[in-house]
Image: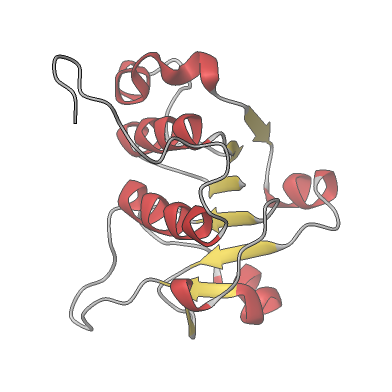
Length: 162
């Protein structure tokens, strides 16, 4: 799976998302401009020691991303979508894009992806969920549908036995 962040602004969110990508073996795609330096201490702290497990790719802008990833299936996670994220069928190599914390994905981009725009249901009075929470919700639904390939589905106690 692939997580795409379009112009992320908050380093702690990007760090949390990087950690989620690392533990799910998902590729993280960052589309500039970024609202932080990739050397930011809050970004590094949120990602803990998982950076070495991460496949991360950078793009100068959305057009650069499109040119380098032709033929992909791209889901657009947005509060403006008509389809609920859990009602669609995800495939192994799908890309899921999330927009800026302050503005989401521009409507000009969404217009070309109406059928692959998805939303997380929430109360009408709320604007949106936290970006890193949204990524976790959607990516784990995608992996649940696929049977969590390559992931541990049961844990072990450290000092005791089940």
